[in-house]
Image (tube, rainbow, N blue to C red):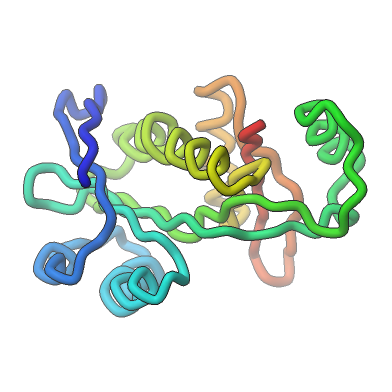
Length: 189
């Protein structure tokens, strides 16, 4: 089943649906400029989706993949979160939390077709499509947030900018300088 959304930055309607085996031609034409994300879509997305390892969503502009993203269940080590983040979670839930791990959803992949980058497309897709889908999934299976593993540069240049645009959003919960990785959390509660 495909859902329609109107993207203001493009002044166009897009379709959002799960990936299918017959999307191979569309997939081959997609490039976001990141070898890791391009190869995931071209080499693993269909099989990972079919195996239930993640759910792969395509954002289609007519017959072209405008963007894709993956969502899967994930957990965070609750005890390793900062006191401020734990307080935010407990305030959002309205109760104290006494668990080792806390359920979240993982935005494992998110990429926008290269020719549409730096035009606000990614921000609008995140705000209008990904976050509402994550909220709907969390309401069904549980989860207090949407977690993203990204580079510190992308965390600062994209996710923190989205945070400012939406007025709510992603908080950095860990940074591993030796691995060039940041872990961000968007509260769904």
